Image (cartoon, rainbow, N blue to C red; front, side, top):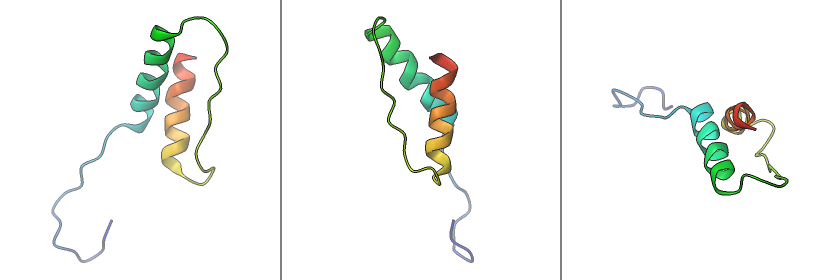
Length: 58
């Protein structure tokens, strides 16, 4: 976000839902076997939310 900018709104998406959909898609295509989930930076909140969503499906 930029302070004092001429921006009226911010558009984003639900990162936790994105993680859920990623995991769901993977499980549908490869239902058997082991999975390796590589995470992003531990200080990146987006990476944390993606993982939370993925863990809902795995």
